[in-house]
Image (cartoon, rainbow, N blue to C red; front, side, top):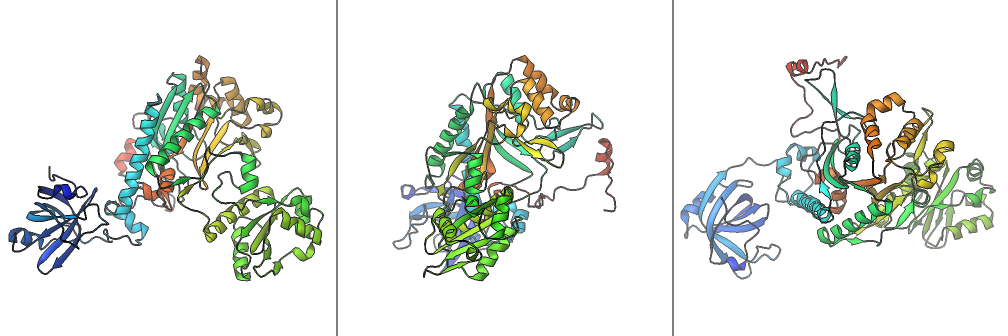
Length: 591
């Protein structure tokens, strides 16, 4: 071994011992002929010192050393002189008086500082990711992720779950995002697909009698990127037999409540047991099916109050069956006209045609873009409905339900950021249930599954499949945390006849269904237990617990927002010989 101790290990009890440390030079300081080096490894930092009159050879050997050189030192642990202690370091009460230095590897000057947290262009960080990982922030994120996954494994193992690996190379069954395809050399013209999730395979495990399965699964989706997406990602995949919806939800709630207490004990869970709300309730209160419940500012429906009003915009929308909703941004009643115009432009990004306002300034003045068109009684009803007080700013959108919910739901979060209402150390977990089983696809005149093809309808809603599928609710449940969906699952269809009926409702030709899912339909004829499960996005969950702005910060080697690996320069061209072996010809057009 190149070290007898780690750089984060030394304490007063080691004083007088001869030890050997190896690591990277974090800082170097020369004081009056004495050289101090902060030596760093994954576990911490230790100060080492050479004296020219005590160990001239070691002092001379340390002379050329610069930041990020890899060195090995041997010496005696001493107590730091009085007044020279560093209480901010766990090792800050001792130092190593070095008598031998070995340079294991010199280093070029890094493109950014590693010993100091500073703003660095992300493209540079990703290009030199191996250097970025040396920084304290990234090290701590990887440690948190490791502990997160280890806790899950231990928790589920204690509850009789089996960790089972499922194939990475599987059958392409296009659904949702595009598949990543892998050409087969030994089967010309045929392709594997990388799994978007192990959904079908974990259901087959239930048919196989595994009963309680989980996997830390790698998943792949060829979709447009954003801050909380990657082309390859990791999820906790979990499935259970002989369970109902509440069984799965209670397991997950217990696991993550315990995980938070152990992994991030400084964070507080807002409410236990976690609140449950229906999809319709989430949309009407928050404008989103993944609401942030850490603050109020909930949507208020005033449609009935304005349907007969003289404000034509509100009244016409209300009479056509649209919605008029508002939010109360407390404390923003003194917003200037310029600031209000900025909010108007914000909601227009989400197809809202405008934003009406009623501001109650702190000095008692009332300013509004529409109140003069309202009867005094109607205005007072609105103020009462929205619990308006001096200093409040009431903001309204009138439009179709979808536009109202999206624009106000996102405006609500924007204003919460401005008002500082979102405490990162507060975790607002909530369950959203009773989703519609289908949504209507007007372009293709068919029903689309709101979750996935294998979600079972609520037992009391099965009859709607024959008469009005839009009324059927699915046995789906989403776990949301601080405005992010972090888990999603459902009770699955385990009856082949019901599964085929769902295929028919979504317009899937029976022959195509057999080609894509024949293995499942056949398996279901051999005695399939009722089963259900859930998948949790590990990257997104860790991002929230680490207070990071995007999931790239909790992944060792992520792709950038263009789905490119800038460190390894991938994707990249391949040799013609490789394409020939796969019977592939490229047609790149004018490119």
